[in-house]
Length: 241
Ligand SMILES: O=C1O[C@H](COP(=O)(O)O)[C@@H](O)[C@H](O)[C@H]1O
Image (cartoon, rainbow, N blue to C red; front, side, top):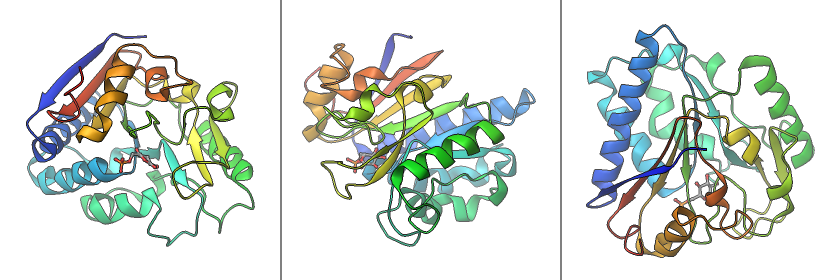
């Protein structure tokens, strides 16, 4: 478990630019060292802004996207073309344009691929065991006003599942209710964990997570990187620190 570092940016736009730049530089460094980096993406508003900045800045970066392996920290269990899909959002924002190898992009199953969320979670766990070490270079995580990360929500039974890579969620308080999420155990194997948070609605959750709340109350408090835990905040989300 690493102590958190906090970076406060003026607003969501400067936060997104900074995260995108840092991600491109981490990936370039990992590739220069001979690695094929694996990353896990998140969904949501600030993630979308980060993804669009990655697309905008990729032409000037030294990253070979065909040698980056892409996973997700969570996904909504809906039809593949549903606008709620985190994967669809990331594809539209950057994956469709930066030159990733489709064989290296591991979307979580949709309702077209699996009968139940538990089947979907089991299939994703198997895919991760087959294709990757599960040791991410960087996991990016949005945080909800209730402190949720990925699809690990306060009070959910999924918070206590530590013997699996991915878990099915059937009662998400934020729609849609059915989701698949990586577990704390899987997220915590990442080298770097980056929280991306913007807006004053999330200020209390940030303060409680950084202050070491119980993960059952504020799930973001239960995730940290093996080498680095970094909070990218804007002034509004940092206002209760
Ligand atoms: O439902 C989800 O919400 C969080 C945060 O989203 P935001 O719009 O409040 O930024 C996101 O990180 C997660 O991946 C997603 O499924």
